[in-house]
Amino acid sequence: MRYSLIVVYKEDNGIVEGVWIENHTGTIDTATQKARATEKANSNRISVAVVDDLNYSTPNYCYRKSLTRLD
Image (cartoon, rainbow, N blue to C red; front, top):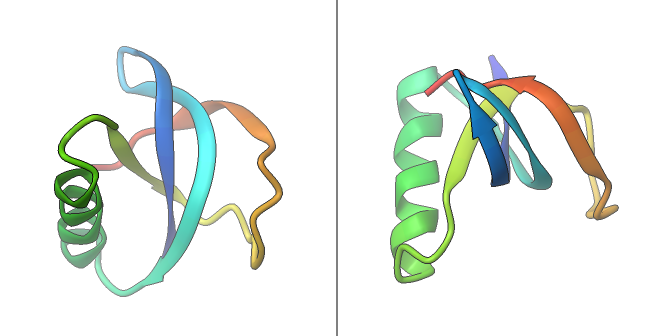
């Protein structure tokens, strides 16, 4: 499966809003591990969510709304 990681700006009951960071191909577990590692690399100053694939290949800095958090 392919998932996307996003920086969470707002979250409400498992629905998130934010900006795409990168895609991840693998399982939901490996995507979650990558999200937690990304948070740790940023001194836990950001929250990273795993969502369904947004089909981006380059950063476009679009703010996305109403995404279901999978992790």
